[in-house]
Length: 423
Ligand SMILES: [Zn+2]
Ligand SMILES: [Zn+2]
Ligand SMILES: [Zn+2]
Image (cartoon, rainbow, N blue to C red; front, side, top):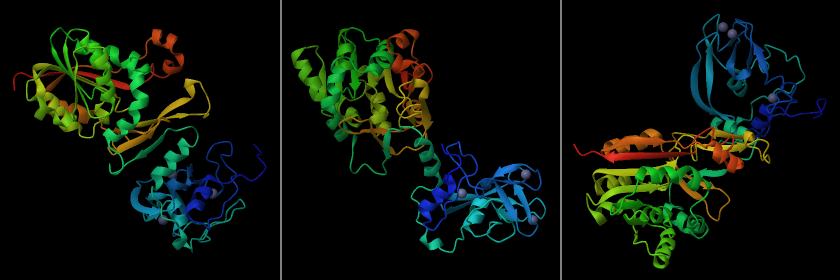
């Protein structure tokens, strides 16, 4: 890197994107980091504690000619959209106690000590005068986007989009589009996750027995149903997408006595009635189902007393869509260069995720508590919960999938419950 030449200040550069007349100053500080900053956007010395503080955490009192940092006084938050932000701090002056806005908003408001002539910059910088505020472009995602996008720009994030409505996409059409490429993967037992991290736990928890009536909700192309049928249990699989067409075709060829139906999980009660099944399994599907509440309610209703319900989902806290994965550098093939970044654990809007397949995947983010509370509400008692961790064996066999990855955080949550008989 040429440390002598011009390097744009990160803040000047970001502000310039929204305020077209904003001058871009040379970054004198933090030049080797990913947020190089100019003198104006560096740090200021608090007149009380003497410490240097980032310009967004310190305020100037033009009456007392003093700086006060937010470590020396109790700041207040003011919600207002300006530049790339949607709030700023007001900090009481340590001398007169009057509230002054932190220097980010002060600059926007034309009250920065360099703008009003209270102080002279010690380095050569062009100071913006906000006389053309009308020309500032409104920001769709204020400060939220700027921090997150900045971090994501370091690496290779997965392409995703939060949807405000399901007008364009719905779970059925998404799975219809994915069926031709996904069905063959499950035809041979599933991908790495299903084979090694999910299904061994699901099968153990369900513990299918001869003649038991077991319902497979959102059975897809029948991988789970076929495995359970080998025990002699009577399996019914339901699914709405074209995935189930593959299951029906396969059953015609290799008869295991499985009944497949094209049915929404929300329609279970009207189809089967209460106390119809000994066990219900729902493998890697609840996070793809729009109405999870009705689905769990229906599952509980069709289940006999003391019946078992087992489900697996992508981990609500550590997997998509709560988190994204970054690789820094983008093209690194080593897992220590992969990071998980939380997007928004509480954002329950549907998320469209492009993994580079034929069609995007549609997922519904829900906090762990909303799954658990739904179980409680429907008389399903928690018996066991597993967050699969990659074993040494698995790491030996699949280092690129498992090492410094699934031995560090869970990608999956597997839950076993029993229906109460005393309510
Ligand atoms: Zn700057
Ligand atoms: Zn201070
Ligand atoms: Zn003051």
